[in-house]
Amino acid sequence: MQGMSLIVKNTTRLVAGFIALFGIYIVLYGHVSPGGGFAGGCILAGALVLIVLAFGEEYSRRVLPHGIAKTSDCLGALAFLLVAIAGYMAGGFFVNFLDRGEACTLFSAGTVPISNLAIGVKVGAGLFSVFLALAMFRRSGERGAGGLLSPRSAAHNGDES
Image (cartoon, rainbow, N blue to C red; front, side):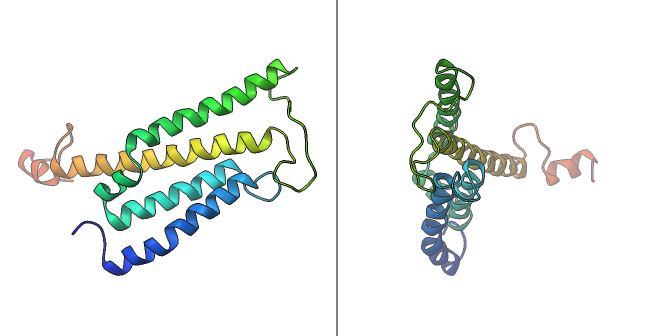
């Protein structure tokens, strides 16, 4: 059995979707209320990390493969850069080239929601990739692979710490 106990898995099934939905809300309404791309991306990554911790690595690879996370990370950065370049072509770096709608609505800030969305994708995918990389690094260190000394091999070399 992979992951944690049945109670943790059932609780994760219940709350992970709500956490992800809250992260999306924070990303989309970050220009109207406190929040934005970075905060929402951290919350989205937290939902994915919760799934990995509760269900194990194999299950999480089916939910969001590492390749998709890396691609999303790159696409978020590219989208942010494209917003900046499009603003530059409209008259100056990061110039708001979209029409501003009615105040305090979702489409009321021109390019800011697009930038928040790009940053949210970048941060969420990036933090999740960092978590997966650290988890793989830890696991390879426990096995003594990758040039790292495991506690057992360090004892054989006389390098106890």
